[in-house]
Length: 216
Length: 183
Image (cartoon, rainbow over all chains, first blue to last red; front, top):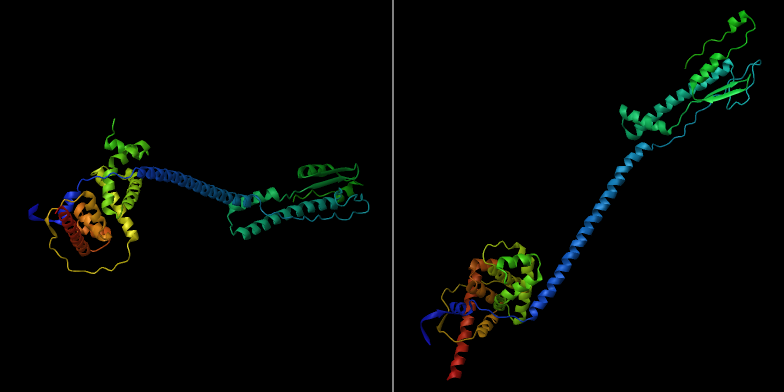
């Protein structure tokens, strides 16, 4: 059949092929089903790996943070310990009419020199303590490069916990053999004030009267 | 009771296997025919249909109910075919010929089956086939075709013309053979 008008080939194909359907092979759906199941499993696995990775990352971050958090505390609470040797000043030698020292290391006499020695020891110890404090401050200053008063105090307090510089007072009474080792200075002072030397005469007593103990 | 299109889409978003099966059952014929137009063989068309549905299931939640759902699925099917062509496309140098604006016409309308017409389209060179289908059968402009296939507009027009010439020659030849048989 001939057309009056020629038809464009493109239009001819368009007309013939519009709104047409062809059924595919039935196996196509099985393939799609199988592929989609694999896709879903892969997604679940990816999600699991992602969550695991985030969890590990967080755990590492927390551990690092805790490590850094603890480190400065340790540095402040555990300052480097130093052994301070407090030289003990040996008591002065006794006069002849006085009771000899029984133990130089531990005991002292009730003699004037002995008391002075004790006082000197006390003074020396306290001076040493002060000098230690100063040195420690300087050391800390040098270490940290900071010089704030509050930090000094904090360092001093922290230092005092570990630099256990204690002042001990030794008392020995040759007459009754009483020995006291204490850190309570007032006790020693009270004992010393009670103890008096026997006087030969009033004049001698006046001359030989002990001067009051000088407070350090 | 059959689900409406909207309900079907919602169920597919929830990954309901029954709904996905129903979606396949409703639209497989249309999309397979589209694949046959764009692919060289039936096997390629089945692969293209498979890839298209996987993509549809993945991206169904992005459908915003603007326009036809069938048109949206058709576009996915077409783009899948184009992507496959681009992956296999050899490097070619475009030669700008003068575009022949004259129409390619048939003197008589032959009686040719659907399968035969599809076969003629499938036998076209890849780029010609894509251009002819996109422009003539699916309503894309030459500018849109050029953009999709990464070619110039003039190349698209040239390819379209050459495709029509080839198809016309084939149709005439088959028509002559049919007439000779009748005689």
